[in-house]
Length: 302
Ligand code: UTP
Image (tube, rainbow, N blue to C red; front, side, top):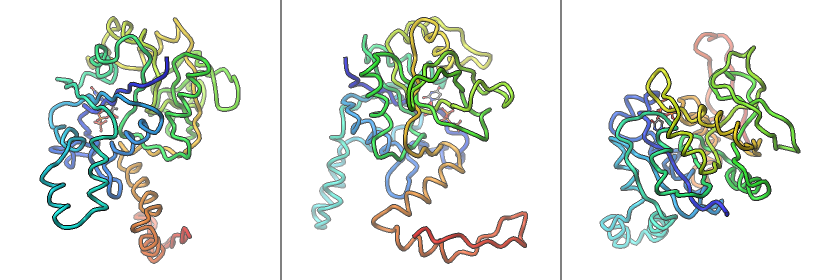
């Protein structure tokens, strides 16, 4: 069975971006001119996904409005003769079949996935986290689906991380072939000296429906949340999970620094403003706050 359905958990509180996320969802923060979630929906759609379930919560209505038709806006753009942007607006509601489930309380990523069980049914599905933005020639999810199609088992995306390994779930891998590993076990946020490898789990998963039964019965953690990693640790005891070391660049846009890095790099690639922005950056005399003497000017990326 091929992967046609995807879950987008988007009910988190986005506390790292407060106060910006007090009244608007983190997933709607723009990278240049598109909200973050649009990049990830585009990745899913170009990987063959047809049905998307977005898990939302309080304060997330802007996501639903974004993927809906806006008659007034379209009418106004038509009236003003802005046909190019009108075309782009008309594409958004037709990208995929999107439905929404509200997670009443943010009880963890595992819980967010579990509440989509009835919409997914008994088939394998993808999970994409809207704040992991991946710039890749072949969409990251497509790379994973290709592995799923060969091995018919759950596939998680990993990347090599040299610093900050303690921020991630980390796999204990068995090398299979280029960029593919079997997952023997995983450890959530290990101390650097206890990490079983430098392969960190990032926000893309292909999962078999057996995971739902596991999540239903799994114990909540100390904070009362159902953690996806605990579900995966149980799943790997019952069936094979493979890891895909994808080709592409990932931005942790759920953190301020990752968001800023993505903004700069996407702006430099923008047809619209890329050239002008590169000139602007090249003209900046950058200083690091603590070492004012080390005045460094950045390289012109061209
Ligand atoms: P994060 O912890 O990275 O995101 O959750 P957050 O909670 O929104 O942000 P911070 O940490 O407070 O700044 C990873 C993903 O899981 C979703 C989030 O929306 C995010 O996409 N999530 C998390 C849920 O949908 N429900 C939850 O209960 C928890």
